Image (cartoon, rainbow, N blue to C red; front, side, top):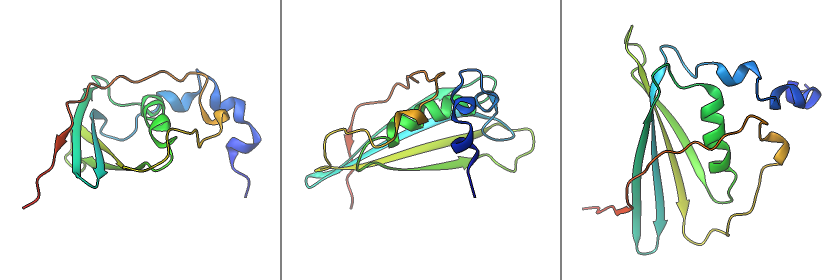
Length: 135
């Protein structure tokens, strides 16, 4: 089966591509929370940040944020949705990235053709790294 991207990549890369304005979920996620976790032999460290979207989180913003995150050897990520099922309430999306000490320096893993021509950096203010204490 041939994927649509393979047959018309320029249509998907256009800054005005319709998928970029689509909401990620219904009801719309109005909050994107980012949790970064970094594991070393000396402990596990975590930091957190969030950004609000009055009209809801769109695919273009999510894609623009996630692509550079996963375009790094050794990074794993997951997404969790909450607030679903509550009619009329806004959902929340949490994106968690996990990295381990000892992974190679940043080396692009994703072909540049997968970056949209409409790509924009998404600035999410995150807190300071804090060491997690396990008891």
